[in-house]
Image (cartoon, rainbow, N blue to C red; front, side, top):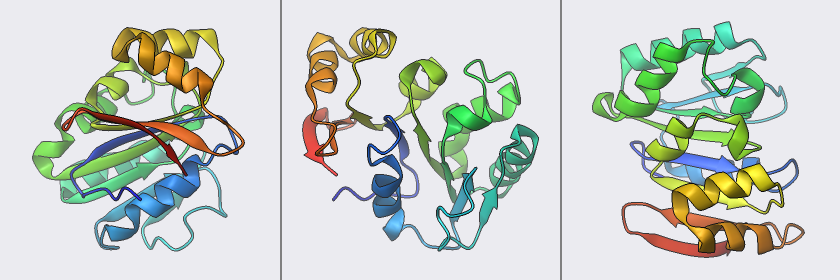
Length: 182
């Protein structure tokens, strides 16, 4: 399984029950607890993480994001970003933009989980270094994937086996691209 470093920028996209949260939990196992911060709308998720905020309110999430930006040397997981924030990042655009673009300068990595490519800012997709796309047939999502990663990536995502929890893994640094089963 792929494990992330505390400076990685990871994006996991897929429908409910596709395996996103399980994949995220598996990947962050190597991150030290004192560096790990999780924001989730679900009280039953990431329960083993000491620094966890359960909220559906963007204001509360932004307070924690700003604290992470001030502290530095953290790895932030945002579960179901699309529930907390609008695509245009209107609730806290500045803090989110700083996190996405400049967080690495403060040794802040992130892993963001969302359902649809169309529900997140394109900036997030552009800044991610490790990307995981679970199967989708939704035209607008596939169009964004094609625009950013090419027709082959969009075709692959469309043809993944949802029941087997397959996803397309893209590593921008090594230019690796492969289908994995979660």
